[in-house]
Length: 310
Image (cartoon, rainbow, N blue to C red; front, side, top):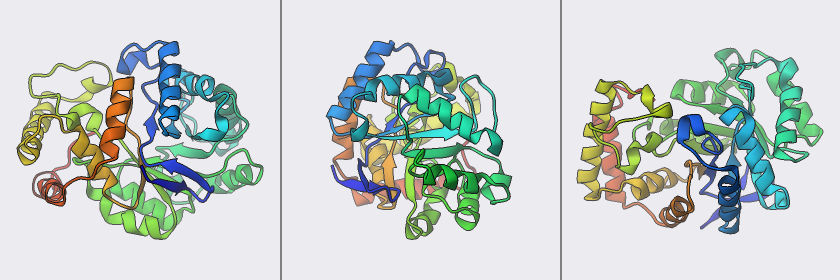
């Protein structure tokens, strides 16, 4: 698969990345032993996946800890992006004065002396509008070599446009998939500014695999959907299946995201080696342009003016 440069760091990355929220996260994503999680990450590296997205708040620091164990002797082979603002002990702390301490704690869990990327994890608009000292402090950490790049992890077009207007960043992680397309209109501006764009939640927490319908029962993080939302998503999934004439929507969902050349990488959550191998295969393919346009038309006609809740 084609590799691209990450955030002016001169490091090359596979466009299929690895979302790590699920590592060690029994509460939200089901059981996975630490041994199996480490083996999964190491297998991903052996297959050429080298971008790993994590955060202190994922599984109370266990996601970072597992990654640290997995990359200990492979640090030069990987790009590690973690976050700031939601701590491993469950606190929310965006104070610029705690930034250095939070970075230090992440470095310890990851068993490394630098981060390839640090993202502000869904910060408030005061930060996104550049009204705080976060960027200045991040630049200091960058000058000291503790981080190689920095940016934000955000969800909406309003947030994205605010960042592009007010903040000088290297990386933006953005919610983007077939059901959440409004941000695509701002991709060119981000690309022209030389910003690496990372697409998160590409499978809409499982809906865009095609495995859920209106009768599905959910647990963990997926319990957030009410009955009306479940029924609406199920109806939209049926329409996607009619477009693709396929029950497994995963290849189309991954390829749709990667069809936008401005996207640097996509980061699905991967739980098994079988999933990993499948995603590698999907990412190597290309979506048919007619299918892509049908996905865009579905969004424009049925979702854009009545957005789905995440």
